[in-house]
Length: 364
Image (cartoon, rainbow, N blue to C red):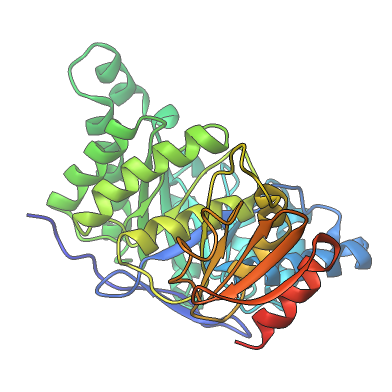
């Protein structure tokens, strides 16, 4: 029913590691940098801090990281970062083909463009030719808000659905690449509607074999965005549709990565790593579950350990319900209990809880 996507190589230049998207390869996780990078080339401290945060995102589970490139200063900063980072970096470019050409001078792993807004076939050809010469992949990125005028009018008049408009737009853009004999591209068709996201990607996968980058665009704040992304991704990924994913949230990129990891884990598409189970907390609360999770979540999920960690609010939900966890922590009166596989191994004060937990965690 749905076509198996072909392989597209991402990265492999300089220090950048190689990722193959499509085929039988694992679904990769992406996020997008949310701040301007325009001044990084002139601020060593800010540049070094940015590099450290990118490396932390990679440890957390990010496979590919995209940056907005609205000007040459940003392009130069991204090129400099790509010399120092192993994770594949993507340049997100609109309108100005010269920015794409500049980013293709270095180790940028992929260029995100929309051929329809680059300006002309000639300009698109210049970008494609250089991408071919440098071994750089391209993503054709299409959103419901940027359909060609004729297709937008057809959607408005009810002649086609918005999802059909997305697929027809993708078909036109791919035709340009086909004429240029370039197949190292990924396609994304993003809508803020779950139903339209599913429909457009299903229709595309019925007819084409380009790898799909799936995502619900402008999904909203944390809770709403997580719900929409989970619904869309679960449906599509179960059908084998989607080679790379990005959870779009009005929140931190760390939360986008964590959400994508949890979705793929629960779908059986990703294994290993730290799994956190925790209770919601209630009036019996004997331990600050929320505070502990806030302090530890990112560090735990960045660890290269294949373990389950239980964080429970009281002895009712403590060693009993968390007995299958490799390590857990809960409260009992004024004390904090640390347990392993349901057996209590330490009882400490609240002030000692974090340090004691770390000691037991490192011993695993």
